[in-house]
Image 1 (tube, rainbow, N blue to C red):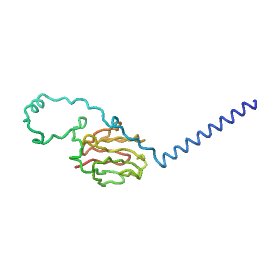
Image 2 (cartoon, rainbow, N blue to C red):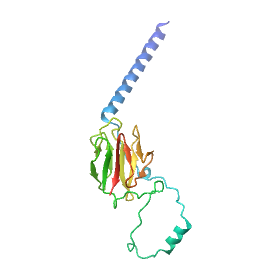
Image 3 (cartoon, rainbow, N blue to C red):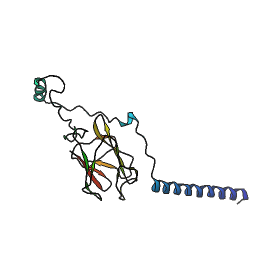
Image 4 (spheres, helix red, strand yellow):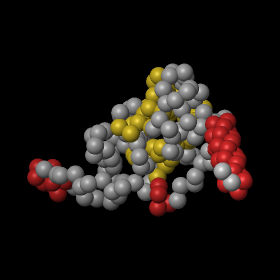
Length: 188
C-alpha cells in the first residue's frame, strides 16, 4: 500500500473514533441532565377534532323539547368523552391527582390552574423516580377549561386507559393514566 492510502485510512479511522466518542458523550449528557422540554405552540396544543357523535332521534327530540331560557338558568350538562363515555376532567369537577399504584401510591396532589409536568427531573411538579419514567415524561395542562394529557416524547410512552397518548388528549375523571410504572387518576 502507498503511504498516501495509509495516511487516508488512519485519518478516516481517527475521525470515526472521535464521532463515536462524541455520540457516547451526548448520550451520557442526555441521560444525566435530560433533554430540553419543547414549548408547546398553540397550534400543537389543539387536539384533533373528535368525530361527530351520532345522536338518536329520541335524544334529538328531547333536546328540542328542553326549555330554553337565559344562560345560567339550567346547569350545564357534563362534557362526555366520545371514546370512553365518561365525564371529562375540568377545573369545575377535578380537584386532585391521586396516585393509585407505584412508588408514591396513595399520594394526592391538588390541581390548580397551572400545567403539571410529570417525570424524573427535580424540576417536575410530580417527581416519579423509577426506571421507566423519562426525565420530562408527560404534562397535564388546561385547554378550554379541560385537563389535557400530553406525552413529552417519552421513551416508554404515556397511556390513558391502556391506550398510548400521541396527541394532547382530554382526561376523563377516574380514568387510569400510566406514566412509567406509576398510575394515577384525576378525581373530584
